[in-house]
Image (cartoon, rainbow, N blue to C red; front, side):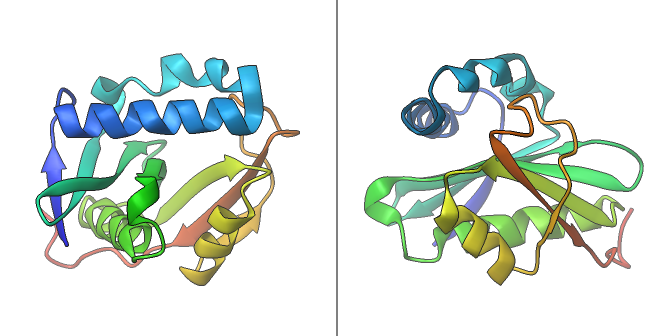
Length: 155
């Protein structure tokens, strides 16, 4: 598997994000539309795409929240690439980049109905926290945090 930083107009990233949006529409319905203005790829600090055998397998991104906190966003794995470690690899790569930029805390949220995602976040060391203001609303999401070690080689 190869994980690459991509720009906001990367066709693979945009195609995966479109699949993510379609998936969330199926899972939570119209509430996903509240996210549109928050999910513009140009507003994200970093975007990544994972590739397996040259094919785009998954995506993820992060966005600065405050001087200590970054939000992990847009985690999605193509259905035929699931259960192969893609999401874990993407999240770890995002965490490393977040820490390299000096942030000490990562937060994220997932739909309340996505138990597989919540189980993965727990496995990766995230702890469930109170609702932190996601546009989905507290009734629709579960929120998580993880404290990160800042990279000593940060510039």
